[in-house]
Image 1 (cartoon, rainbow, N blue to C red):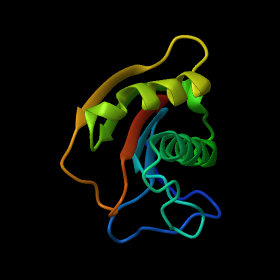
Image 2: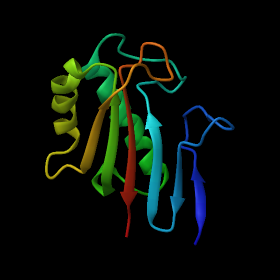
Image 3: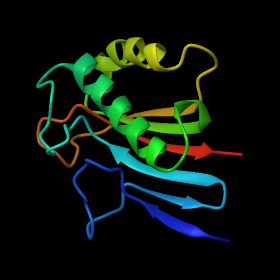
Image 4: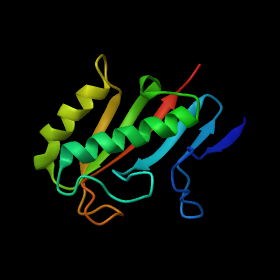
Length: 128
């Protein structure tokens, strides 16, 4: 089965630490996406809505580079640093998933890899 590393254009290349995603057959495994801009700087300090929006936009960019979209996502795992941000995250998620959302796990963690990051979203997508 073919395996291809996915590096979205215009985004910092995180290798050799990790890859943005791998496409294996018709399944795309996307590493956790933070709320960073194209230069790798965190956006939306202390603003869950801004960070969630940017993380979803980054996820969408990785999927697009793999020939997929958010509509192809079947599972997400979302890490947030404070469960009090759950409603703000959910509000933004509804902007990206108008219909049936993917299966999802939401986990509170002590911290994320980028200081100040409030959210990280990883995903699995399946394309035809």
